[in-house]
Amino acid sequence: MRLAIVEAGKVLAEAGVASPRADAEMLAAHVVGVPRTRLPMVPLVDPLTIETYRQLVMQRAQRIPLQHLTGWSAMGAITVEVGPGVFIPRPETELLLGWALAKLEGVHSPLVLDLCTGSGVLALALANARQDANVHAVESDASALAWARRNVEARHAAGDSPVRLHHGDVTDRQLLAELEGQVDLIVANPPYVPANTEVPVEVAEHDPAGAVFAGADGLDVIRPLVSNAAHWLKVGGSIGVEHDDTHSEAVAELFTGRRVFTEVISHPDLAGRPRFTTARRISAAR
Ligand SMILES: C[S@@+](CC[C@H](N)C(=O)[O-])C[C@H]1O[C@@H](n2cnc3c(N)ncnc32)[C@H](O)[C@@H]1O
Image (cartoon, rainbow, N blue to C red; front, side):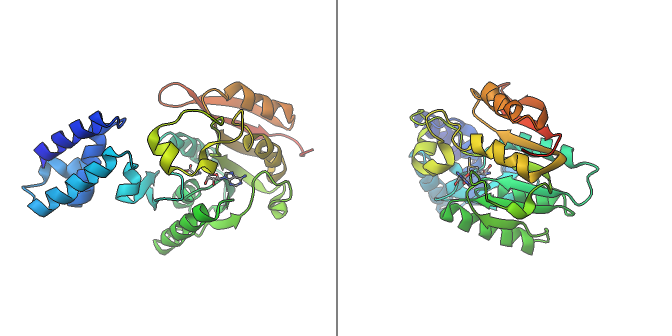
């Protein structure tokens, strides 16, 4: 298998795949049915397995996302099913999850809201880590919602408390009026890429456009989302919103402009680029 992986890595590098060796190993692990770390322990594999691997590598070389080939994506301690019609969760969103879990420490039975949930991944990772949490998640796209529903059912069957899914538009001021002033924590990874931005083939051809792009400046969803969040959060509640690395000042201004927010903080990703902004609500929403 080792030789096949080395060859696959070269093929994927030539095809312009961003992390060729890692992807070659992930596909091998998928085909053989072991975690990637156990690949060195795998003995000789049969020709059929090698052929299956070769076909998957060819598909990846056509820039079909790795997660569409394996069928899953990880976040925190869980995996969710993903495929065509839903946004593939990104590793950088783990940082938002980590911040959220730290914020919830010491908060008993928190009410949590995940806006723009896609596959449901953030909501489900939070519900898994905090079994006492009451987690709601909102998604506007019917196809993404179907993936989220499947993942919610699977995690519930695995023993996690159920996430409540809502089909809705997070920019709608009337959405979830029943949660007004109740929410301890909001997380959001909305679409935020400015229209006409060049993106990798995997994103352009396989992520739903409505999950990626958000108007000319990329803030078409974040702008009303910040405003609505002020209504859903309880006094003392917190929000974390992922955004484009060029948006840190604009998003901070949206929070400070709302006046009911304080402690507006920009957080970097692993590459040191501003990736998400957090804030805390201090007084009654206006
Ligand atoms: C960047 S994806 C993030 C998905 C998921 N939270 C994650 O981190 O993998 C954004 C999601 O927001 C959804 N979306 C876009 N505009 C929305 C809106 N106005 N209201 C609700 N959901 C929206 C998209 O369909 C997509 O599933």
